Image 1 (spheres, rainbow, N blue to C red):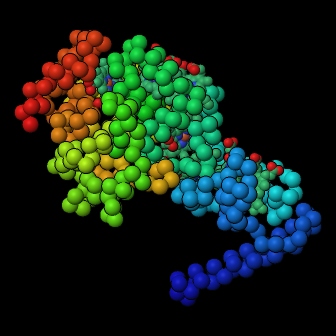
Image 2 (spheres, rainbow, N blue to C red):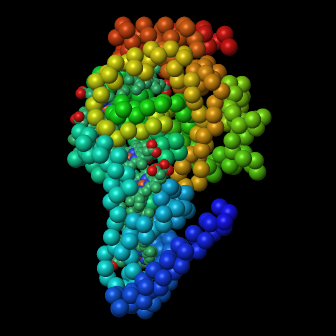
Image 3 (tube, rainbow, N blue to C red):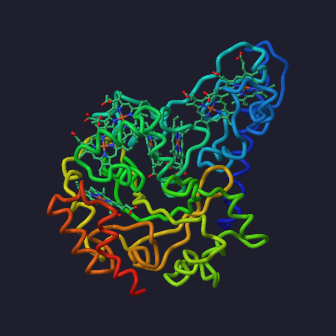
Length: 359
Ligand code: HEC
Ligand code: HEC
Ligand code: HEC
Ligand code: HEC
Ligand code: HEC
Ligand code: HEC
Ligand code: HEC
C-alpha cells in the first residue's frame, strides 16, 4: 500500500468516526436543549448577528473584518464560546468564555508571577477579537493599552522628574521598552500628519495615503523603485517633496519580541542603555504602512538610513547612535553634563546647525 493510499484510508476512518459523532450530537442536542435539530452554528452565522450593529447591542458587536485578520480567526468563535447552542440567544443562557490561559500557558505564567499580574487582566490589554502580533501593532497603540489605566499626561509629568524630554520619550518608545524585558528592538517609522503649525501629530491613515498614491499602492509613496526597501535616497526625496509637506516620519523604538514581565527596570534609568550604543546598534528599521482595520505592514529600510538625522529621518534623532560623530559627541556631552533639562532640543539643533547647512 502506498503512503498516499494509507493516508486516504486514515482520513476516511476519521471522517466516519467524525460523522458518527456528529450524528450522535445532532440526535442528542434536541433532547438536551429542547431545541429543534439544526446545523451547528459557524463563525459566519455568529457574525451574521454579532457583526451587524443593528442586530446586537453595541457592547456585543464584533468587527468581522478585524476578527478575520487575527490569529484567533482560524479557530472560530466556538473555540472560545463552546457552550453557545443552536437556540442561542433565545435560550437565555450566558455563553462560556475560554480563558486565555487554556492556550497561552507560558505567557500566563510569566505575567501572573510578575509584579503587575494583579493589576490588569489579559483582556484589559487585549481584545480577544482583535489580537495582533507585535510587529503589526503601532507603538502608539501599544501605549494606548497602558493608557487605559495610566493616564499618558500624568506619566509624562511623573517621568519628567528624571527623564529629560519625557514627552518626546513617551512618543518615541512604547512603555514596555522600559517596563519589560522585551527584546529585538527595531526603529519603526510611522507616517504622521501635521495637525497644527507646530508639534501635535497624528498617524496618517490608509485613506489619506491612498489619496496621495492615487491608483498605485501606498508603499510607492516612498519606495519609488519598487524594490521592496526604502533607501536613504528615497527617504530624502519623501522628506523633501512639497506635496508631502504635511507628512512627517516619526520614529519609535519597538520590540519584536514582547515579554509580559511588566515592572520597573533599574537599568532603564541608565541613559546609555539606549543612547550610547553607537551607530552599530539599531540598524534594523522599518517603515510602517497603515492597513485597513488598525494593523500595520512593514517595509524594510536600508541599513543605517534611519540613523541619518539629517537626510533620512529629520524628526527622529537617536543621540549616541547617529551616523554623525559630531552629533553623537554633542549628544553624549549633554547627557553626561546633566545639562539636558535646560538645554534640550533647541540648543542641540542650534549647535548642529552648521552640520545641517552643509547638506
Ligand atoms: C440570531 C442572532 C445571533 C446569533 C446567530 C448569535 N448570537 Fe450571540 N448573542 C445574540 C444576542 C441578541 C445576544 C445578547 C443576549 C442577551 O443579552 O441576553 C448574544 C449574546 C452573546 C454572547 C454573550 C455576550 C455577553 O455580553 O456576555 C456571546 C459570547 C455570544 N453571543 C456569542 C455568540 C457566538 C459564538 C455565536 C455563534 C456560534 C453567536 N453568538 C450567534 C445574538 C446572536
Ligand atoms: C480566543 C478566544 C475567543 C474567540 C476566538 C472569540 N471570543 Fe468572544 N470573547 C472572548 C472573551 C475572553 C470574551 C470576554 C472579553 C472580556 O472580558 O472583555 C469574549 C466576549 C465576547 C462577547 C461579549 C462582548 C465583549 O466583547 O465582551 C461577544 C458577543 C463575543 N465574545 C462573541 C464572539 C464571536 C461572535 C466570535 C467569533 C466571531 C468570538 N466571540 C470569538 C474570547 C473569544
Ligand atoms: C482556544 C485557544 C486560544 C485561546 C482561548 C486564546 N488564544 Fe490567543 N492565540 C491562540 C493561537 C493558536 C494563536 C496563534 C499562535 C500564537 O501566537 O500562539 C494566538 C495568538 C494570540 C495573540 C497574538 C496574535 C498574533 O497575530 O501573533 C494574542 C495577542 C493573543 N492570542 C491573545 C489572547 C488573549 C488575550 C486571550 C484571552 C482573552 C487568548 N489569546 C485566548 C489560541 C488561543
Ligand atoms: C498591561 C498590558 C498587557 C497585559 C495585562 C497582557 N498583555 Fe499581552 N501584550 C501586551 C502588549 C503591549 C503586547 C505587544 C503587542 C500588542 O500590543 O498587542 C502584547 C503581546 C501579546 C502576545 C503576542 C506575543 C508575541 O510575541 O507574538 C500574546 C500572545 C499576548 N500578549 C497574550 C497575553 C496573555 C495571554 C495575557 C494574560 C496572561 C496578556 N497578554 C496580558 C500587553 C499586555
Ligand atoms: C487595567 C489597568 C492597568 C493597565 C491596562 C496597565 N496597568 Fe500598570 N498598573 C496598574 C495598577 C493598578 C498599578 C499599581 C498602582 C500604580 O502604580 O499606579 C500599576 C502599576 C504599574 C507600574 C509600577 C509597578 C511598580 O513596580 O510599582 C508599572 C511600571 C506599570 N504599571 C506599567 C504598565 C504598562 C507598561 C502597561 C501597558 C503595557 C500597564 N501598566 C497597563 C494598572 C494597569
Ligand atoms: C525611558 C524609560 C521609560 C519609559 C519610556 C517609560 N517609563 Fe515608566 N518608569 C521608568 C523608570 C526608570 C521608573 C522608576 C521611576 C521612579 O521610581 O521614580 C518608571 C516609573 C513608572 C511608574 C511608577 C511611578 C509612577 O510614575 O507612577 C509607572 C506606573 C510607569 N513608570 C508607567 C509607565 C508608562 C505607562 C509608560 C508609557 C506611557 C512609561 N512608564 C514609560 C522608565 C520609563
Ligand atoms: C529605552 C530607551 C531610552 C532610554 C532609557 C533613554 N532614552 Fe533618550 N531617547 C530615546 C529615543 C528613542 C529618542 C529619540 C526621540 C526622537 O528623536 O524622536 C530619545 C531622545 C532623547 C533626547 C532628545 C534628542 C533631541 O531630539 O533633541 C534627549 C535629550 C534624551 N533622549 C536624553 C536621555 C537621557 C538623559 C536619558 C536618561 C535619563 C535617556 N534619554 C534615556 C530612547 C531612550
